[in-house]
Image (cartoon, rainbow, N blue to C red; front, side):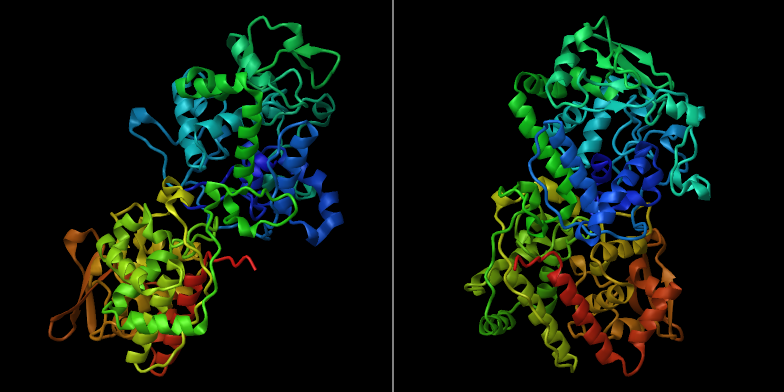
Length: 633
C-alpha cells in the first residue's frame, strides 16, 4: 500500500505521491494497479479510528509500509510524519488523456517505432499503472530491452537513478507475492464502479472463489522467493541461479518461472502451505538480469547483502518522503539525522533586524538598479516553489546557482548583474533574504511613485545553499516551460498558454484573484522575460497602477491576432483612428475573454479600486516571496 501510495510521485510537476492520502479517492482508488488495496485500507480503519486526528491517513499508509518491512526483518532508514489529509480528489493532477485502463488495452506511452515519447509530466507507462507494465512494454514479454527502457524512463521521472531503481525492485520483490489465481471474468467492478451496497469495496470475486484463495490482482501468480514473509538475499540468488522460461498464469498473464528448480528454492503454496510451487519473475525482473547497466548493479547487490540493505532502505525512504519537501517539515522521533541531497538542504539563516532591512532597502534603491530588474530577480528566486512537493522557492537563493541562473526565462545576463550588485550591498544579510528584500523595496517604490504608501512585509532568516548542497540535475524539471506572470513561453505547446498560467498559479498555491492581481502588477512593473512589451498596457511603466486592467478592458480598443504568431500574439488598435496602441499575448487577453477572469479584472479596473489593487498585489507578492520558506522555529 505504501509503495503504491508514494509511487505516483513524478518530478515533472511534483504532483502525486503519498503526502495527502489521495489513494482513498478516485481515480487512484480504482486504478487496476491498485487492485484490492481497498481491502488493505479497510484493515487499517480500526487503527485510524483509534488514533483519529493523531495520525493522518497519509502518514498511516507510509508508516504501515515501514512496520511491514521491519516485521519481516527488512532494513528501514527512518520515518517522518507530518503529511496532511485532504478530503476530496486533487482534480488539478493530470493523469493522462487516455480513456481506457491498462487492462483494457490502452497503448503504452512510449513507442520508439512510431516516434512516440512519454508526455510530460506523466511518469507511468500506461494509464492505470503506478510504474511499468510488469509483463513487458505494452504487455509484450519478448522485449527485454524495451522493458529496461521503460523502467529507466519511468523511475527517472520519479527521481530515481539506476541503482535506486534496482534496489527498489529487488527489495520490493524480496517479499510478498503476485495474485493471478483466477481468470479475470470472475472480477467485480473497481470500487468507483461497484453497487452502493458494496460500501466502497471493489474487485469482488465469487464467494466460492475467494474461499479457495483464488484471488487476482495483477494477474501474475506466485512469489518471488521461497520465503515471501522474510527479508533476505533470495531474490538475486534465484534470479541468477536459474534460467527462466516464459509461461502464463491461471489468469492469463505472462510471467517467468525457473527451469527445474530445487525443492528448497520453491515457495509455499498460498492456498495450501503443505505444498510447494515454483517461484516466479516478471518481465521487469528479467530486465535486471538482461540489461547491462542493471545487471552490473544487480550482481553487486547479489554479492553484497549489506549494500543492498542500505540502498533499499535509503531508496524506500526517498520514495515515501520525496514529496514532503524540506526536512524541517518532518515530524516524529524516527526522522533520520542525516541530511540527504534530494531533501534540498539549506543552512540555517539569521533573522535580520528592522534597521538592517531598512538600511539595505535604501542602498538598493540608490544602486542604479531599476524597479523592473529588482522585481524580476525576486520573482525568479521565489516563483520556483511548487506546493505539490514543496520544492523551490526563495530559501537557499538557488537562483544564483546552476541550473537556475542559466534558465532563459530568468534573463541570465541581467540576473547576473543584479545578483552581483546585491551581493556587494548585502552586508550580513543572506543572499536569499537580500533578493527578497530588494524586490520588496522595488514594489514599495513602484507603489509610492503611483501615489500609494505601502509596506511590503519581509520575513527574514533564509539561508544560502551551496553547489554541494544542490543536486542541479534534479532542479531541471522546475524550469518553467511557460511563465505567464512574466509573459514567457519557451515554445508553443499543445496546451493553451493561458491554461499553463493557471496551472503555474495552482502550483504556487495562488487563488484566481491573487493570480490576476500579480499578472496585472507584473505587467505594469515591466517584469516580462526578455523585457518584452507584450501586455505592458501602461504609459507609465514602473509604477504600481491598475492600468493593465483599465486599458485591457477599454471599449475603445480593438484586438486582432498577429497571423504569423500562431494565435499567440495580438495587437490592440484605437477603434476610431486605427492607431496601434498595444501588443499582447494570449495570457494577457484571457483576462478579458474568459468570463470568470474578466469578472475579477473588472473589479481591479473600477474607478476607486486603485488602492484595492495595490493592496491585493502586495499581499499576493508577499505570499509568493515566503513560499517554500519553512521556519524551523
